[in-house]
Image (cartoon, rainbow, N blue to C red; front, side, top):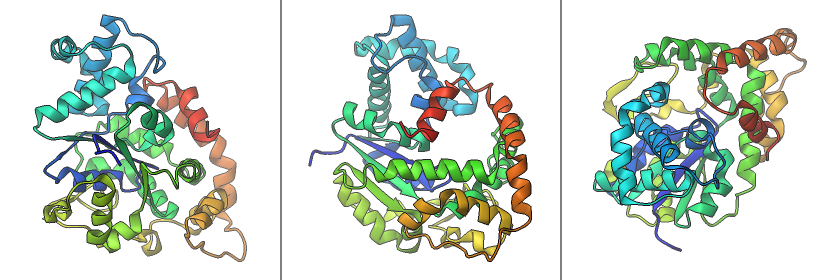
Length: 337
């Protein structure tokens, strides 16, 4: 197997992709990027379309901006035009994927590292494009219990007040409105259906979040073997941050064992659990997640079902300000194409 030049960590949102990126980012050969959202938010043209010099500079400036400031501040990309122009002088590019590759390689070399690690979860829907374009890339697909994902998504809006103060208030409001057990379950189910397509692919490794937490050293050793890099003890010394239910603890450098089966300790009502299992039961069984049994549907379930179209409508309105092709991403997620 060829050496690894790029690592892409993918999976359903709130499945541990960021935590794994921090683990790998502690390795001396790996540089971990922010969530770049190249495919889903920054890309306005087809992957194969030839770009003009102006379009290339524009896209590269956006990537530089997101890496520096985060995806919520991508509108400040004009401040990076000069830096983008200098990078483009080094390497002629033809299309958007060339820009993406140039960016990953140059930023990694700039930090004196050898392997680029990109951690955008919804790159899950672009696995084939990544495998086709990056011949030495490896993909790690994180899988987590849908009910813990649901709990995390329900409280995601609180991240601004639990340690991620740079998140705009508008984004916290958007996360709050976006939440619904049906939406979360459908997106999780779609993500896991995509995962099953690559179960036996030699360049894709499925990592169970619960196993990573419970037996961290063993699982990270396996990941290192897959990536063809040496295991380093410092990899497991990651800050306990990123939770949507507890305050960040940057002073604690360890794998937080409390992240497994948090849904059983409260935070979700029976109706949320019932509905989420109803819409994701096949994939939950496929990945050996035991379903909670109900004698009858909780009464509140019917309220969630009736209010879903209204909640979906308002979520759609709040997401219109995101500069993406919404229809393209809905097609990727729900039609599994």
